[in-house]
Length: 238
Ligand code: DX5
Ligand code: ZN
Image 1 (cartoon, rainbow, N blue to C red):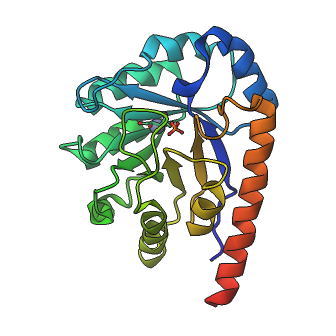
Image 2: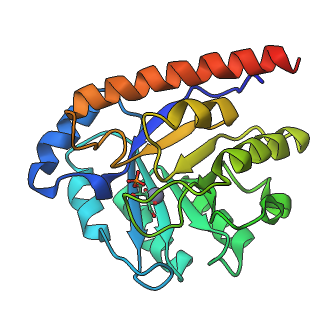
């Protein structure tokens, strides 16, 4: 299985140390991470509210790293319109909260922002069927949304694989983003299953036992291991 996308790293900023934030953003930038992932929650769609949009606004002027926003809110269109002027590069919305998903994806794209569909662990891939033309990526939640530090759900690897097959069978060439317990040990299996964008939080990039730079090096090693596994699998089933 040859994927058309390089595997990218998106550190989840709700896992950063607020007291060291400026230094951590500088280090992430120097380490060449591909995005900064921001979890915007309304304490209603999920029972939490780690960061507000002012956090993004204030950070925006200090770094060029693309901002990837994961909305976990009831009113997606309100937050899309709030975020657009800040200068974010991608926004994912949950299919479970978007009453008018097609329209919301179109609204995101109307600002020139990449539009992603986020799926809770239990949500079937079939909800993607009639928005494949409107989406730029799929976010497969590998934990139930709302909190950092959780354990990956049992179906995660299977769902990533099923999502890759779904996209291939429907001729949809978009990357798969995975989010939740993307750990050093799980990254190889997630990448082998088809993950292209890794949202990395407390179990990898922000792991307390290592420095940011060491942790990112370990993530890159784990990605390389996953690509070897992918290559081996594709030969196996060729
Ligand atoms: C959870 C968020 C994730 C979370 C990842 O709802 O979407 O981005 O911060 O944290 P870890 O990697 O610790 O699961
Ligand atoms: Zn997230």
